[in-house]
Amino acid sequence: MKRYMLAVTVLLSAQAAVASEAVIQGQLEQYRSQGAGPFNAANGEAMWQKQHMQEKLGKEVNCASCHGANLKEAGSHIKTGKRIEALAPSVNPERFGDAEKIEKWFGRNCTWTWGRECTAQEKGDILTFLKAQ
Amino acid sequence: MNRKKFMGVMLLAGCVTVAMATLGWSGEDERWEHERGERGEHGVLPVTSGVEPVMNKTYKAECSACHFAYPAGLLPERSWVKIMNNLDDHFGDNASLNKETRETIENYLRGHAADHIPNRFSRSILRSVDENQTPMRITETGYFVHKHREIPARMVADNPQVKSFSNCLACHSSATHGSFDEHGVRIPGFGRWED
Image (cartoon, rainbow over all chains, first blue to last red; front, side, top):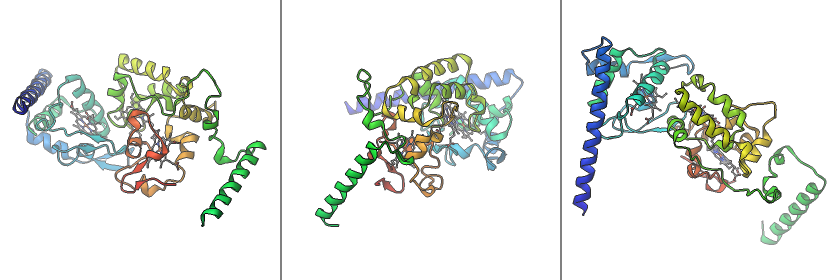
């Protein structure tokens, strides 16, 4: 029974990983249709780390300010302290399963962190970096 | 203090309290403390001790990403309307939603706001807010400030495990079930709250 449960769990998480992979590929395809690409994980990581001045907070912030230094571990919202589950799809199969959710948070987090929208190229680079985590 | 003396003091304190109540005296501290005595006064209305926990799925999904999904019964209807119509500048964050989602959530919050929920916390909060005012925060209502006035900054703003009074769940671990009972409070890094 235990072994059976394990098999089911592995199968389910593998399926979730496939789902997020398909959603991410769909997004990358869309960015390409907007003229972006090819995408580069190293560029994505560099953008993820880059510090920007957040005017309302009066502090330098980057994407890790809430998502944490280690993407395989939970982060914490810089203002409210709320726990934010790990972003790495290798440890959190619920990540990147919904295109609308991805775009919603790109919209919010790019404007909050960088003071502007992310371009299709930047989103593609970042997703390519994140999906490999 | 020995037991006898203690009982004496308690008895005296009791008499003073009764005397003050009879005289209709109401000090600053007691202004919002009537809630217990009022229970049952309204006969038909069941006065529950907790706050109605969050039940709407859309509200929960969208409004619990950055913080705990605050129970609707902790702010008056007019506050929720104002909050829901200013989501693009939400306490320095951008929490905007598409029209349909926004309306679903606004309807839920309005229907379950403090004005419509007969429990003691909701009533106390309502009573502590000036009718001409529309608070944007639970944490700025008179009742909230009053209940949390003894908690020093080192346990909240300067406490990396709490950060902000808006982080209800950090100290009220049963808040998701609608319970804010003062006896269940644990402040991370400082332990149980005894007063």
